Image 1 (cartoon, rainbow, N blue to C red):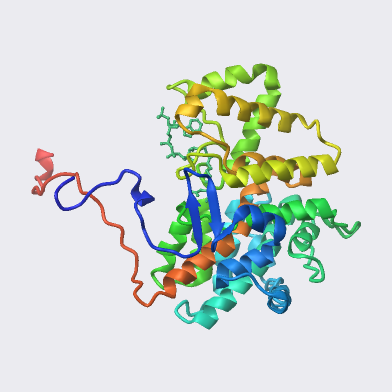
Image 2: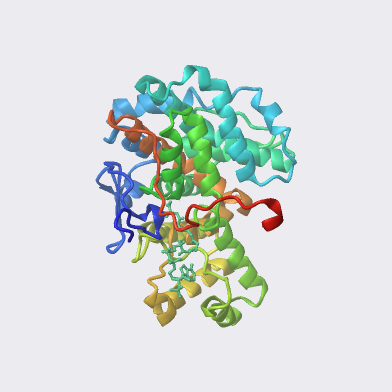
Length: 396
Ligand code: SDX
């Protein structure tokens, strides 16, 4: 407190904007997209309905739903030149490094026809990004596998198209299993938006300079990669596999001891949240999806799922976690579902980015659409040296 500025160590945890898109009540564990509870959207709608809702504020009627699905399907292919851009990466590059590059590269194709201040241009950029993210993520995966790319097939659903581009090969087509497609679509819905999280704030700040929307979304992809944010789903599954390799449920106590040890940096990945100090409603839905998917695949006794539930039980009962209000967040169960679908761990965060793209765009459009908006300029509380003169070299 200097009398001029107040300093909030949480930095962006002060209100950075007002919004009509997503509402979170961290104490009640409530999440609403444009007023609709996530529980109802995840069970009664599909991802493209959710995209329409986040972008335009209302759920589509039958005709608008048909038109929107058709419009998205007309933009699922990417410029053939993108394949040459991909070739610049090592085959073992992390998919998030590749995706950051690919999304940024899209701005090279559309920068001269996309004025972020033009609402029509913003809408086409939104449709292009929503439509092309599955194709880009699947291309990043195929490139790493050394397999040929699979072109989108637009008669399939959004999630089914993505899974076919991921898993089909020239030798064998991929017949999407309806339970797995539904699970993939639900993962997209649950990750679509989450008000002013780190990556969304990055997209808003980046877009506030008037830059190309594709470049602003690329900045969001880069921020989401971090293990404290979207990278937590990959870290959570790696954590479960580590525990499993080192003795599994029998040795869980030793792991919990490490987490509680003040001198250890070990965290329970997939637990805790800056806003939710109650159960993340998305984690509950993700756990139900886990049951459905593992049941459909005859994997009810999946050891990692049993380990995850044992960890959750400890966290909900142990004083250390209860005192710190550490509940499972969206990232805790999503990895187990994706692994059961056949998605490699390294791709989990890229799928989070695929789903979050619509939220980033909706938030960016809301900001740019406000005639009062200006370029963002966070302030600081300077606590460095007072003014002083440069000493001659021999006196330094
Ligand atoms: C996402 O913001 C969003 O909305 C993000 C997101 C979205 O949809 O965009 O919801 C997606 O990013 C979910 C969060 C995914 N991250 C993880 O699961 C990584 C593990 N979680 C932690 O890194 C942590 O919980 C945070 C960063 C998510 C939140 O941290 P906070 O609220 O700032 O809490 P804190 O770091 O101040 O910790 C408070 C206490 C500390 O202990 P003490 O110093 O008081 O003794 O809780 C401890 C922390 O050490 N703690 C944990 C812990 N998280 C916090 N201890 C063990 N395991 C953890 N996971």
